[in-house]
Length: 152
Image (cartoon, rainbow, N blue to C red):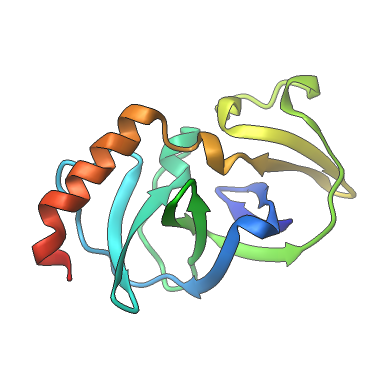
């Protein structure tokens, strides 16, 4: 698992879904995209939507910083970048299903597949497959298609 920090919480993604990491850089707006999309970037000629975990989990927004990272991963057949505060480590984690955990309010646990206990707290295992619902995926596809000439 790749673990990362976001708004004082620790999350992780299964490593097999992670393609690469980069320091954050300026984003381009994507009009008519779902609210969870904070912009797009051009990665070696590929337009990649950037998804805000803060928005998805109901965490406070913050300005993009040069100390932030983009985690490039696959959501189904779509490549996306997740905006995170800090990349922490690659670890083997034993996770319990999210429904077997104590109350982790105010986080929205429908996007968490499990929770792993670590020495100094818990790590929430993020479920990329549930990140975009069907309507958001269609909305994102339309927004990318309509903006494509300006983005490349």
